[in-house]
Length: 456
Image (cartoon, rainbow, N blue to C red; front, side):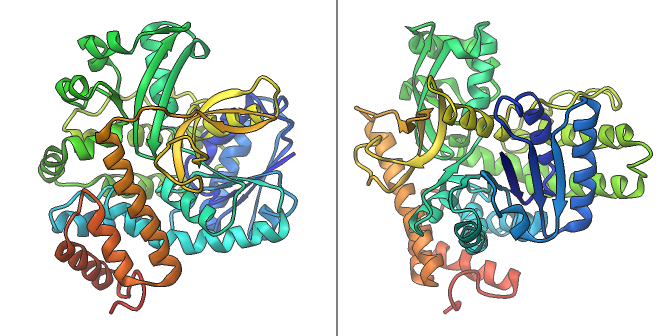
């Protein structure tokens, strides 16, 4: 079986390959084909991937191609992991938002909107190719904003698409580590939308422990995703939040912290990636592949250890010395995808959090709405866990953001500026007609062309 990666020059590809090495034979994967429009960068990433394979003595084939059809034709699984406009577009998205006094994060609010409207048309073109050259392939969408983009693809009629996000799985991993029990013995039930979800049940070996966890100060302070929240809001709502709810629960704190830092997350990532690729391009990777891999891992560590630190005002996590860094085993996005493939190939299945069609899971949403919920994945298919009682606060948030997503998709596909403005008006992090209009005008001016419609 074969995996095609569209956007294969992304820095996470190396970690994806390393994670795959632990399971490629079990999953019957024998080849990974990488495609990207940035071929010089793709060559570097491809060499690092092959070194990771060779150092483990594995026979997985990894190759890069310059024609997207070669990364699509006859593939069994296809990963979409794009950043349309590159890292600097993320900087623009965040800066324009912050200049207008609103959160500019790349998946949440107007930053996510700007990223989505330039990404959706490109992904729809790739999906048309997939429909032609690999109609039976499953598409795993890693591209952010993952839930909104996955919604756009389903709305266009592409239904073999699964949205992947590592936030829920990473949180579960850390919870299991804190509780000192194997992950498979911990059940964590999520519901909501991508980057707008809550945990309502945590069972350790079948015992419900959610109330104990919420009451435990040490637990709330020890889990990376939870330490940024005021414990009072967690106890008041009675649910454990997805880390991106920080932008809703503590919006003014996030804005203040970003302002004080003098640098956005996008600027940090852009600088790290520029320096990483500069060093790698200057190296003879064929002569010293391990040295190149250690350079890559050092910069990836800089990225990961500063995650959410600017917005939350917390210190960066400590760094491991260069030259001694292990390759992560792909627990993140790649791990979720591989778990999903493993579940799809098995009778017993796996329990995972995925962005999929609602299919009655959240009762007040349409079946064709994309939601992020706990699912049972097996040869029988993907079965979202049905939610019975959803708190009113969560319902209001979900209804608002899902309507924002629907309108954003309609705005992109119909070229409607009015629907784009209405979408942003509904979003809780904008919530104003005049501000929504000004934000669109400012993006048009900064990008030098209308980002939606004709700009009128």
